[in-house]
Image (cartoon, rainbow, N blue to C red; front, side):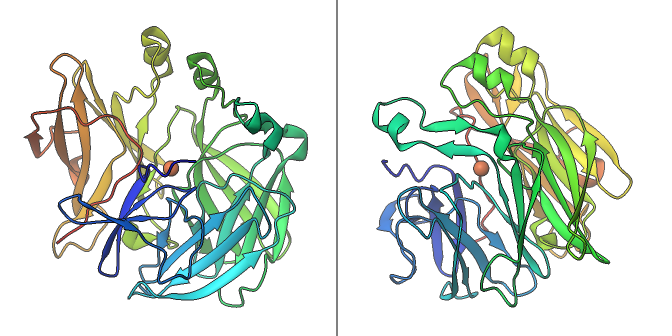
Amino acid sequence: MRNYANTNVISCGDNILALFEVGLPYKITPELETLGEYNFGGKVQEAMTAHPRFDPKTGELHFFRYSFIAPPYLIYYVANNQGKVVKEVPIDLPEPALLHDFIITENYVIFFHCPLVFNIIKALVGGSPFVWKPEKGTKISLMNRHQGKEINFWLKTESFWMWHFMNAFEDNNQVIIDFPHYPTLILDDNIASVLSNKSSFRRIIVEPTTGKVKQEIIDDRMVDFPIFDQRKTGQPYRFGYMPHVDLELMASKGIPNYFPELIQYNLVNKTSKVHRFKPGNYCGEATFVSRKGGESESDGYVMTFVSNEDTGTSDLVIIDAANFGEEPLAKIHLPVRVPTGFHGNWIST
Ligand SMILES: [Fe+2]
């Protein structure tokens, strides 16, 4: 598969890396010039997830790569704050799986293995290579980060799909995991299949000592592209953000990904606020940037590109996290449209 390097962009050590999960990262300059593929000094082969996670306490970068071709189908890596790979753990997956994201907590590395099965025969005849097999269920894995040789256990639960984690953290003997949950996934290349994939925002609570799994619905509006203050990765946190995916608009326009508003979730109080854009304006994934010197999760800025369907241009819109429902603090007008894409990060230079 051609490596588009189009899914996410991070800074790691002295490098800016554009990521695409079935290929190696591409190193780029701050001016967006391409420098070439990057393999962590030969330590990472084939691919790297587009959703690595920085541990805010250690500065380490945690990431993985999956493979459809040959075992090990999953390898977990840790790079230190200089970008040097210091840990590599092959994980024994029974069959290849599309693992788009993962999450870490203080003690665990967490993967959700959903029943979307890769079929090489379907791939060779040119259709979607994936088959949804709900009878297999979804498996939740927790691996102890510090012992870290193999998965500690897989918990089988009812089948569901997920693309992204918001965050996860530990509370007494529980591991709490927040994510947009899809009851099923149809991956055909048409709007009807896109519209059939309806998410809700859920919290799964796992007790590693007993293997018990509980589930709560936080919000049944369709949402995805979760972000939060990354200084809270793996830690208890208060605020998270997602665009509301408007299924009715998508159905009427016949085009996916209409995000007319951003939602701010207060995960402690279990409340939410909405920032709705003017009619005909649609946002993408947001990013949270703390104010210089700001310590609290509400002391900072929520930024997103907002496109206007009439003018064909975009604004970078900057919203005060502490006054989320109010008018933006600033809109930076751009002469072009920034198409709705996947993921991004604010990189201070
Ligand atoms: Fe993603």
